[in-house]
Length: 328
Image 1 (cartoon, rainbow, N blue to C red):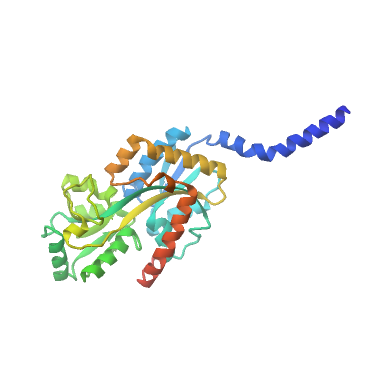
Image 2: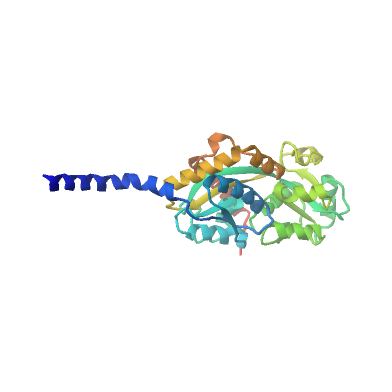
């Protein structure tokens, strides 16, 4: 009788193990630092946003979140590193519109942007700004357009890579203004901005998080925010509508992903840490200083990011492919 009771107890305990495993795993994780892969160079907009979130999320997860900058090929190398990482919760990927949407239309990727990643949370959204070198002999957007038409064979625009937001928005700008200039791709927008400040290129269309500090410092000139409203951090910079080119509204959103097959309980904990970080006034202020807005609460779920990413792919891939944009 005693042996039968022990056998039944053993069977019951074995049956309960699958139910207890997720809870036990969630309690054990994280037991060491977490890597957050930024598919761009240090000092760029995605890097800046990633560092703010890494610090705030690490405090809530009880482990350091380390930034790993993996630049190159428009961010596709860094995103590929996320896809190949072990799905154990110790590798996360922060990225933006071009990294997790546009690259699928411009590069022959070795991974699937929808099938090889587990969405975690939409993080922030910020408009682009049109900026020029300080020594360019123009003072506003209308003068810039006239100068570009007069210097079509000389003018150059820096981008964070082929198919990056600055490249795509620059093509839209050219079509709307009937202007022509050469695009110079860099390994991220940080080195492109350095060349703009040095006068090596003439203009950029870039994220607020990258250019606002230099606008405020007076090392570059800003002619328009590609939005319907001005940025609080640069109240003197007019909207593109006010500057004379209505309708050119483009922004860049950032999200957080993990490798496919990362356990759902870990995804839930990372999401909770991200949501809590985004609700913290200090984090919100730091992101606002970078020109970033926070999505509504109902858009911060893994399911919402997955649906939004797919909708963006459905919207932008036909546009990018029709423009014939191809990465190296």
